[in-house]
Length: 156
Length: 265
Image (cartoon, rainbow over all chains, first blue to last red; front, side, top):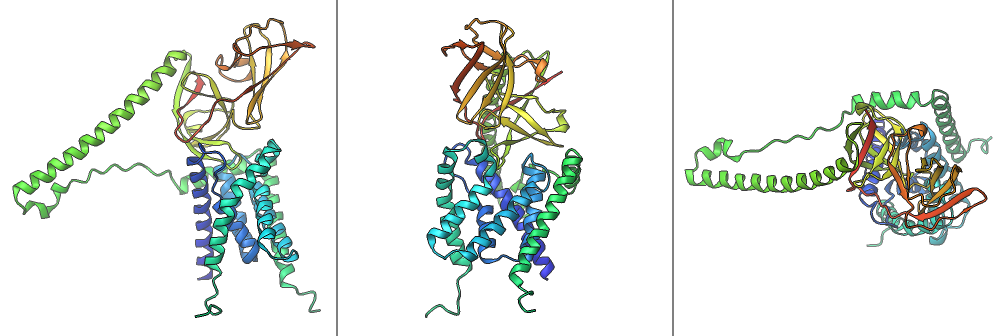
């Protein structure tokens, strides 16, 4: 059952990547709007679900990215995903919790996620990343509050 | 002893091992010149074949339940279906007319006896702002083949070819670069910073400034000669035997853009 769950999760992440690419292709006409559901997933994993199992999911998702959606060498995107997850988890466990810290971490993860775009032209891209981070961080907050709702501690 | 067993540290170890695994795969792929990723991509294509468009015309009148109904109801449904079909045909006809119009524009601009012109479409925008288009090795597409727009201007170059899809680098990509030549034989390197095109001379044979168009050329590995930029309205100055011009990019690629691939026959 655990194995099946893992397989399902892997396929769901593939679907998430596929959706992200498809939505962003359709939104390519509009500047400063970009949906990053897979980055939201990575950020959620690094904050609340940092486990050994999720590393395998990230490796396979990266392979999927490299094989079907990018021109990169196989394994490059996996390393990027794993580094995002490790760095963000490390910083999150050491920094004080708060919305500013969380958003800064989300911004940092987006900077690494969009590393190729930033490295090609610095300056304007930093502002661009902040703008695309805002709706995506808002989506992350909705997702986090929905998934992490503790029913036992809720006051009736 | 208890300190040595830290579950949090163990998770980091797993991530470190996963990075090492990815790094190993990356090294193999680098040394095999992308043969590993190409092989896996082809194998997985066989497992997940491309979805075919199924066009089943569902006919209500063929259902047995309607046979028992009165002829009038049958006739009504048949007519409704016919109207729907006619509407579909009208829409399709309009689309084909538009497509034909844009195709004719390209055919007028390009010598079709020397080149194959293939219409393509965008499948995905990659995270590195490149575009994945339909068509690859299956249509004999090669790296450095050109992507042109309706007025036959170069808008991109094929940067990677897979089995049935390719990645193109467009003028909007910050890593876009292409070499070109003008009517005097001067050679240029045209690069992009995603906002504007930077034109730098590589070899100047003539100091004439009425350059007008910079073309692609077969000597640079591209099908030639297709215009890349038009400098007829831009003031040009040559200093220290170097020409340097910066022009804004007035091109935007979207999911709905018409793209044409050019191949030498």
